[in-house]
Amino acid sequence: MTHLRRNKHMWQISKQSPEVSPPASTLSVILEDAAVPKSALVSSAASPKTPPYSPRPMSLILSPGQVSVGSRMSVDPPDAPDALPHSEHDEHPPDLYDVSSGLLTTWGFMINQRLKCLICMSCHIVVLPAHVRSHVQNKHRDARISISKSFVEELARKEGLVSEYPATPPPFEVEFEGLTRAWGFCCPSCPATYSRAKDVLAHSRNDHDLELELEDLPTAWMQRFSEAPLAKSWFRVTPRSIQLHSPSANYLTALREQLNTRPTLPASMLDHRHISPWHMTTRWMEYIENMDPHAIRSVIEPPQEDDPLFPLIQAVRWYMSSPYELILQSSEVCLQILNTDTMTE
Image 1 (cartoon, rainbow, N blue to C red):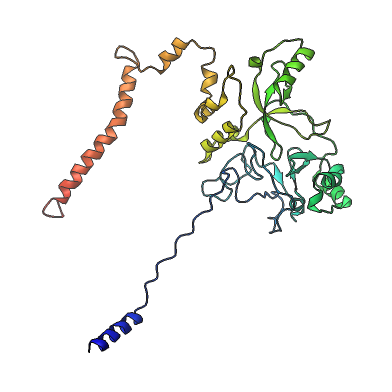
Image 2 (cartoon, rainbow, N blue to C red):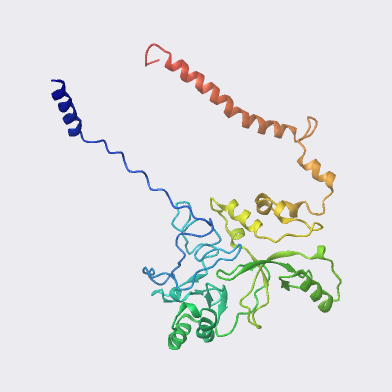
């Protein structure tokens, strides 16, 4: 009987359908670089969405502080819930787009609509239509790409691409997507910008007859169109993150990455790595520049009882403390309700 009962028990167990645990929720992919969106392709507003295509023959390499194609200096992916879709009311819409067939992306190029130029997404430079074939043959021979000269000419005519390098923009223009962005030294007397401090000192001495010290040189973000002789001059730009009215959820992360990409400065100069993203957002350093240290201390010191601003800080303290008192009172009321004899009370 015991043997039969045991077999029956085992049979009963085998008949019970195992309880299937619900599948684990799919975890979102964590990108190594928060500034790289999931989709790096931006289609033209007037063209349909680009269909799927094979991987690019030339890898898209991002320089320090550079954002990928399609992001407005925001580190949120375009399809993230917190990311706002681009609209015609945006102050600075995306610069880069591809043709409807997606052919330019397979070549490693995109069009910058502000510059009306082709951008090589591997070299991050402007490539004139007449130089596209030679650029690919010389710089990206391993990609094994065959480009039709007639297609490039027709594309330039249809999209209105310029045949010469653009003129140098005014200082602090919003950065151009697709181009390399670097941290450089500026001339205090003119818009000239250089990647090395000694070049600025020589420029100031030869062109402005001024002898400057390294501590006198301002610094800023800069870009250039190409390494060609006619387009290798750097110019100052403003990062797109500063232009956004509604920062993304990872805004502070992006600012910290910008701070980390800045080169090491001499001890005699202000170390920008010690400036937090809060300083960059509020521009507090500009506000207190040339101020008396004693006056700065008086600004940050709490007001005393005889200070006219003391009632204001008292009101703020009361406002901040009252919610905590309400939490305690609410818990006591809940306990009283739960301990009553009838539900109506």
